[in-house]
Image (cartoon, rainbow, N blue to C red; front, top):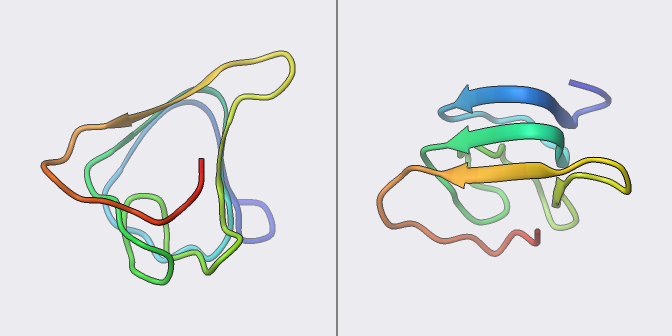
Length: 77
């Protein structure tokens, strides 16, 4: 965690979380079993509008692996 953000450099399996910030998968894989809209706890936190999911950067590749059944989100990737 960094200022409310979740930063992943490797593989992380997460269930439900209430962290409020961005989800940053800089390198590796974030495997999630639940996904929800802004403000609702899920594997990618409870972020309010603007709490985005960011995959990789200029030099790396990040992967979001959704292993849950159904679900949707209004969070931007």
